[in-house]
Image 1 (cartoon, rainbow, N blue to C red):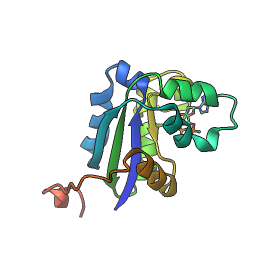
Image 2: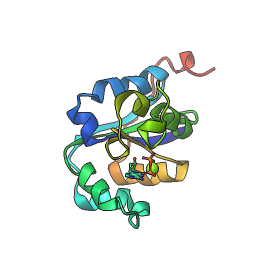
Image 3: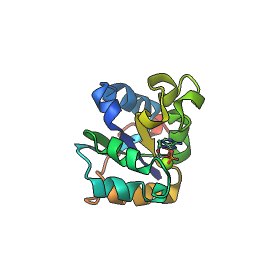
Image 4: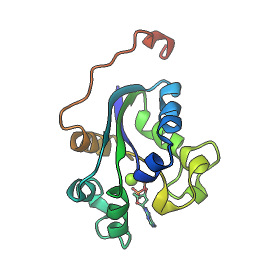
Length: 148
Ligand code: DAT
Ligand code: MG
């Protein structure tokens, strides 16, 4: 089964969006394999966003992600990387359809409340970075009610 890394960013936490955001993924049927509430060091933020280090907004991005606690989430499910990105919406909330998390909950690209891995490879890298202790074994009893 595929896995992805989701993170509720500091603005999402401060705006009390932890529950409504988590609800969307869990109600969909994805399995929770990791969940923690933590403050982010500058070096973890820089490593997480390493591929954006040459962008003009990199400094502001690191400052934003380290500005308060985040919720780190590991999810498992069929095609969860791509489907999770659909649930999240486009990078810029202005281009995110209503019904997506970014379309419903935020306005600006630099305050877009949530992260989701963009490929299976980056998901594995990010899960290793944010959950170095490994994931939690969690197989719902009613899996046959989610998958045929
Ligand atoms: P995504 O978060 O949709 O995967 P990304 O990986 O390209 O998007 O960028 C990571 C974050 O950086 C994004 O969620 C918000 C910020 N960002 C991206 N493009 C930006 C821009 N043009 N101006 C300001 N912040 C930007
Ligand atoms: Mg990205």
